[in-house]
Image 1: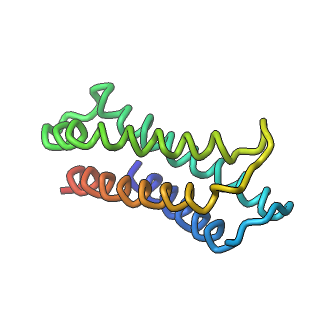
Image 2 (image 1 turned 45 degrees about the vertical axis):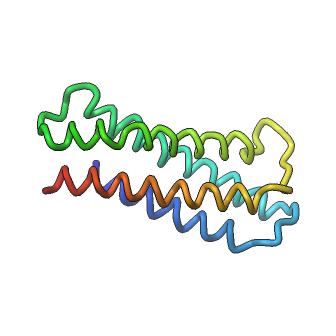
Length: 131
């Protein structure tokens, strides 16, 4: 589970850098495809952490008290990070609406900060799980 989480995290960060590196953002098929791929990877990563990692703990499959306590401590901030990622996806996943790029740089900046926070939270939990 930890290896999968870290692998998905790396994939998100690589894709994030690819999207961020395309500024200034102009509407092209290439950007549309990259954003669509990034959104899918972001949702997969977000869902895995939220439902698989925290789901395992919430379902009672985790018995180590330290891990449970750490999960309870970081969960509210983790939920906020999940919401930010979902909101980004809802705005930039072009499968069901027209793509507007006027705030993409700002939204990527906010998402980047949120991903950094989420990574810190995950690292605390993973450290606890391994330690």
